[in-house]
Image 1 (tube, one colour):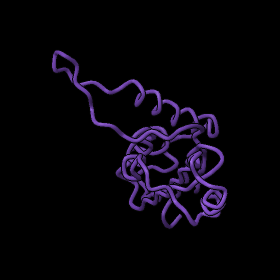
Image 2 (cartoon, helix red, strand yellow):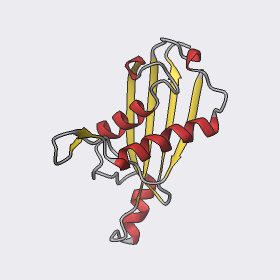
Image 3 (cartoon, rainbow, N blue to C red):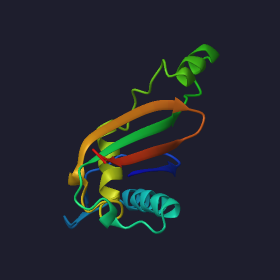
Image 4 (cartoon, one colour):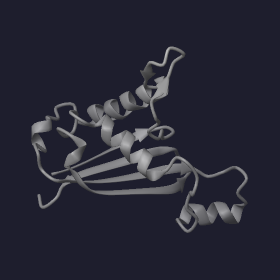
Length: 140
């Protein structure tokens, strides 16, 4: 079994909890909004999905982040970026991107992101800004 879906717009990396003036921990609103966007992007593509499909099986996740080409790039650099020769070395970090997306999909796609035993994250330049997520069973 293999699923693939896209999350439109700018990617958000997982952030640490914040604390208010009273020292109470909270999740920043933009993190909640992005988590909801990830969930809705999946549900829109797979409205009848049931987490039991992946049960407690080992999973492989591949996340490709398509980032905008900086306006400061020359035509030559833009061409190299679109060919995949130049790659984005800017924030957000790959591990924080994966953490945010994988956490958002808990109890939506799979029971728990601990099922992901193989993870690959790539950042590439593109004319469009979005994230492609592919999750598949290992050995299935």
